[in-house]
Length: 308
Image (cartoon, rainbow, N blue to C red):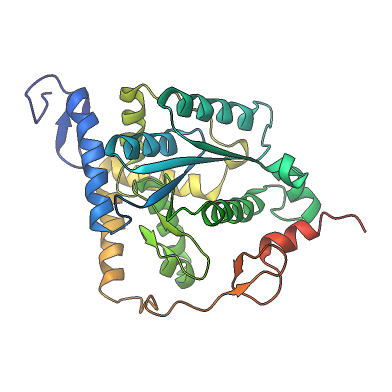
């Protein structure tokens, strides 16, 4: 198969786009598409400071690499959660993230959660009896709190995450099955910031996971291949597998599913209250914004670990 641009040998064939590219032009195509998505969804301007949440995986490191190539003021944030089940997951992901930043001369902020708060995520889940043996809900609360805290305290304009199309389609599928309107309302390439909440963006939301894996491989980005050990058997992976079966027989199905949802969202199908977001309260302990009066979810969770 030949490259659509130069006629040379193609190394990536994207059936969903009816597009094949050689290495050189694929590594040009991905950043160009990313820049187009940033502009289309009005994610951030060139002069704004971007904080990229990096995990050591292919998506977040590729996103940081792309934003750096595009000339954005992008720094990284790594959250060490103390997830070292069997394979030393957190230690290895941190090593690869620090190596990536050092090789490119980029600024990386590291938050060691166990060192800062005295508990790793698995222990915190056990102490608070959340997650029923799977600490994902605790992990989500902790990551959202810390990402917003660092973005706010260090004066970043926007927080960028490496969610790809497969991630977004799986979440959309789950929320559509349950018709979880509150979650559907909040799913978008951009979540505006307000009342102390950082603006959150997903520049990779229209790239397939395979496309980002190809970008990382062709760019020579070394990343952690293992998934979080607690993600094994998760519902999100099950939904991804179902969508992959659909994609295999109907190339482009995932992208169409996601884009049609965004179009419906823009058309007002969900009656979005974007012009008047709900007012937020201020947590009296950490100062973070919260939906309810009193302490935020994170501080209430941490309070349960304190010995009487």
